[in-house]
Length: 302
Length: 291
Image 1: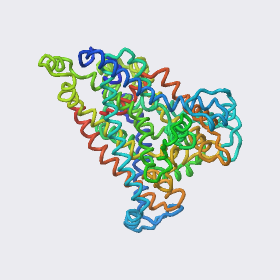
Image 2: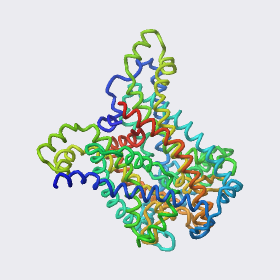
Image 3: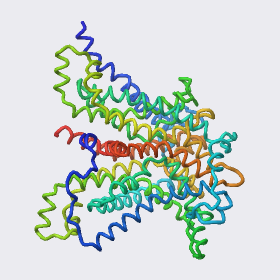
Image 4: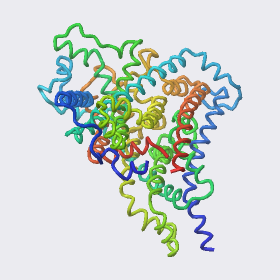
């Protein structure tokens, strides 16, 4: 598991499994791979081309053709003037809400996860395994089980319907994963270095800052990407705990798509969907390797 | 004195997180568990009614619909994702020149929100403007694909969209597994004259057992939690045709104001997930210790 984080798990470190079969077989393999690539790209392509068409063209034409009279009107509308709920604000304020929610939540949960992982590997104590086990199990609970008490708790704390309330929720339910990531990464870090520094009189925080943190780059990237993707894409907590001024992007998109009365403006819906997808897509394109490492680390525990 | 303080610092650092988890996870589970034995409706009530909510829950056709749908959706989702993921991984593991380009294409849906996936597939599957409409435009007038409007078939559209989102991830898990297979074993098989097909069937795929297990656990737990995708794709409809336990819990608790029943359905969801996850984590952690 740790190796999955420290080396790219998918990089071919040796020759592939079998000898190259004959030419026909290879042509078939390539054909199949390309067909699958089309299958995965098709929905994105459909959204993109149709977000650039006027509504008439969508109704009369087919969904695969390129726009004849291309227009960015749907994008402008989705961003600034589309009706969401009762207000014609477009998605812009909700995009901002998501950013205001994601940035602190990612930062706090990653920082706590790093410290927890450090304690659980380099300063173990009796019962540390139980503490870790409970934190790990917390990653998998169906969030339906916490919705009712969470709503009450946010009310008691005075955070109901606010962005800080959502930050708290995402920090709490992200802690298990961030702790897991850092614990597994630090477990492979040589304890001798920590011991030597202790003998030299370095304190708990000095060791963390000067010895572990400088070599934590990769795992910080993995954790930040994981948390960013999950929190940005969350719908359930946003739908349950946000009020009009704190609704995140995913919930706003769903409101735009599902509650529009009158004419369904598919092109605006598609533009909005791409806007909601863009931040995580960009992160994925820029740092896909780390994204995959996070997924694998999240999948293969222990 | 200073040394004593140093001893406490690690635990002090860990304690806020542990406290949050204890209260917000385990305390909340206990609270929801308690509510499931009360007559809570729009607001929590502490009036104990024993197992009444559970008895009512299992008599509700709506809940049976959700459980049946979960069984259909979950089994197809796990099966198709595993088969497709393994197939793609094997195909990609044939010294494919464009692997660096293809792999990210298979995997990018995993970076998207289920709401985005649901929006895209909702219109793709909509007979009025999507695939059916396009086929008609192309001259195939008799083409019909209206599963998303069909009560019998709608749950399968949820499978289609969910497989699209997750199969690339399963591919990545299998690819990592294939890349970990000792090449000496494969060479030995080839020297013995085994064909590529036989090598895969008899040697390599059986070696993927741990990956199958991990994929099963991850996919099963995603299936039980599935909520966003259904909301965006079908809203649980037509009628109740695509209700799942997660959407059931939400609507009973917050829309129909039957909180006691909602809480009991959440407890059942948790029991389902824990009965898969706890044995898995336990065995993973034990082997981790031995290593």
